[in-house]
Image (cartoon, rainbow, N blue to C red):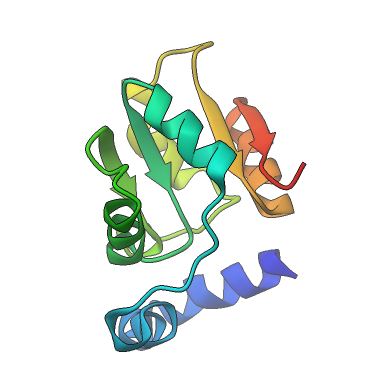
Length: 130
């Protein structure tokens, strides 16, 4: 499951340079393979500012946002390389919580661990798969 994989990645951070390995996987030849979600991109373009919390590398997220030309309103990216505990742990959320507007924040994701993360943080969740 995602949860056990995330736990293993968290454990490995203490022993090896897991981020170099992840970069080779996430950004082969500096390219990133992703499937743009038009509805999500349109939503992001319509809002004033947003933050990203991802179990991907910070550099992968930034490159993807830049390639989609939606990086300008991104205030902060918290990737797997910026935290010690991956989602659904709330560590990343706690780092940006003070900057969020209570009752005016939503977490967008595509995995059950994203929903678990939103529940753990007591914020609304939108599943882009639906």
